[in-house]
Image 1 (cartoon, rainbow, N blue to C red):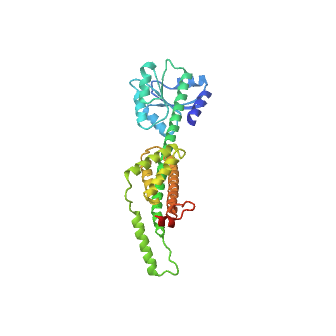
Image 2 (image 1 turned 30 degrees about the horizontal axis):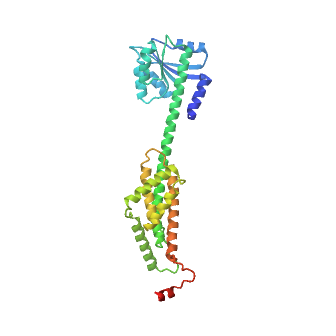
Length: 338
């Protein structure tokens, strides 16, 4: 239950509003003096009744003032309250609207609800206190509806902001992939500075080479095998749901596969960004923050496992395993004996 609903229910339990400002739209055949006297005699709430004659006058007052409730008198042949309610809602008005008429509720209340009215009161069957409670329910429904619209709008803006932030992070990660290749080749992605010992020709040559590298690595890399992409996609989805607790072995196996296939950190990051971008695009109106946070952790862990795999292979290349001889065994003697 949200805060607005809790507040509305607590207000409803506390009693009627202390003050209600009502716009009463009626006709010349039925004035509102009797209604004002009835509210004053009941005394359960202070009702400020502002009476106008005709729909045009009522809409004009609504443009100039704010009312808690709009009360419309249904007079067949003179003022059709149901038709007024339909036009009232179609015109964008969302103020609480209650219709007061002579027809029994079983004949008109459903039609009033379908037209957009919040409630219907039959003059012959509704007490003053009952009419006040109809006002109170209509006011609280209006308050809840407005708060709900505000919350929905705020949620939409938050989700839109999250998706924009996710797109910016993906762009930054793509730029990082290019920077990794430039750093690996000994060039900076940013603007170069000329040293004091460097000649103009050397500086221009270095700048030209850096520009060519940036242009080269800005191009998309050749695609990886579909089986590897599908495997990483399933791993990312499982990681988003389960976290790292149950996937350590799967990530280690993936890193070992990447190292055995001689896939660089840049290609691994490219694979990660491509799969993550596809996953974020499929979220629709759902939040992207949780997915981005888990994806960052996955990329960090996979790259860590990949670095360990390459370090292990590097050590094995520098120090290959050697066959240890048995004690007292001489290889040269063995060859002579053979």
